[in-house]
Image (cartoon, rainbow, N blue to C red):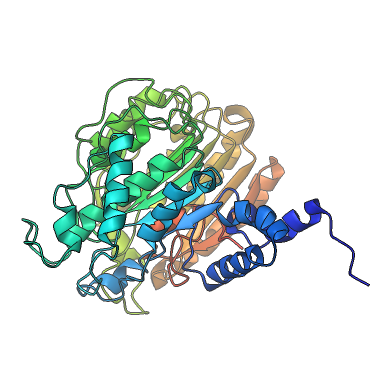
Amino acid sequence: MAPPVLPEELLIRICSYLCFHCQNPNDFINTDVPSVWENKATLARVCLASKRMLGIAQPILYHYYATGNIPGPVYSLRVADHGYPCADDKLPAFLCTLIRCPILATYVRSLQLQEVYSPRVPAIGFSTELLHLFTNTSETLGIKPPIWAQSAIDGYLPPPPYKGQTGPRIYIEFWLRELIIALTPRTEKIIYGHSRYAHLVRIKPSKRLLPALKSLAFRSGKTTYKLDGMLELIRMAPNLTSLYVIGSHSWNGEGLPERPSALPQLQKLVVEGLEVPGLNSLLRWQGQLRDLEYYSSGVIYGEAFVLALSPVKDVLTRLCYGSIFGNAHVDVPDDRCAEHWIRMQGIYSTMASLKEFSRLRELIVDQAALYYRHEHGYNFATQRLVRLLPVSIESVHLTYVFTGIYGELLQLALAKPNKFPRLRHVKIGIVDRCQPDRQAGLEQMRTVEADFAAVGVQMEWSVDRCHADSNTVIPGGTVSAASIPLPTAPRRPR
């Protein structure tokens, strides 16, 4: 007797267990994890089992597309092309499928698009027939194709006027990625990775909109990219709620608009590398931002940073300000104390008062951003935390604490009942390799836990590791398992 037919709802649930997007709906995609592509391959085989299973599994199979090739830890790239992945991403094949079967494009919910630039990358691989298909689609969408795309794939034609062997491929892949984005209007999340070299490529102005796009992340492979080159993609997402800008080292945010309502729905912004003037330019067109994480590239401008927050000071509820400690491009002796890297930071001014941030509930900040460093040590001003925090504060998290501040914490505990009635949580993250003569002061801080408990504040302790990868702040498996997470990094996906 034939086995009973399983109900469709149960089959959908079974297939969803093989889909990274279904199991991690809040994370960006990463198919470089073996279990992810193995599950994807299994789901593809399920589609071949029967017509019924094809109708059930295929929409789930196309929930996401990912090029893979996400760079590993940055320090592995210090030698040209060393460790830079460049597997075949099947980009032309996937685009061809979307064009010839548009219904599949409506299933896509998440995209991971990584730019590949490596001398080991083979020539762009698709036929002249596909080029004509892509060109016709591009013209229909109003996207201008590269004028020398034909010569880039046809070895019998004169080479394109571009120095280097991989330059034409970069521009063609950029064009194909732009087509994929345009053909998948129901995409909710996009993570766009740049290579370890900067290229003068930019998404062209368009009237197209991506109303379903809620989360967008830009990340750099090693060096930098220009944020204004990605501006049109941001403009196409009027309902964007979270934006991650990682590795953009522009100084003043060249090309960013000053319209105050350019991103009316944005709730969360994470920025790393963009200098303070550029951050201010970005914040001027985000009037309702609630959650901001900002990581400097090694220089702390505390006063300028707080001043740059003026456009959103009345709406921010969560603020994180940190620096990426440690040089990730060199090998680090295990016995080198973390304070060596902290002392290398340029601390031009400490963080100014946040008293005017009337809605701020959570603050996460590096200890180095709160205290001046002088020639003979650090100047720990009396009641520094008490003078810094607004009355609305509920949680304080000090990261990369390298020297004891028992007195500061005690003053905060004593001031809590009258000045900070909503304070409920204090977390101290101590650096992983402390200088021996500071160990006693760090241990003394733990004795203040009883004082906080007496006024209803819970204390938490952690260890913060230097040489963290800034890309770990992007939700999902967008980094190598060897990457050291930042103290604020979200949990790794299942």
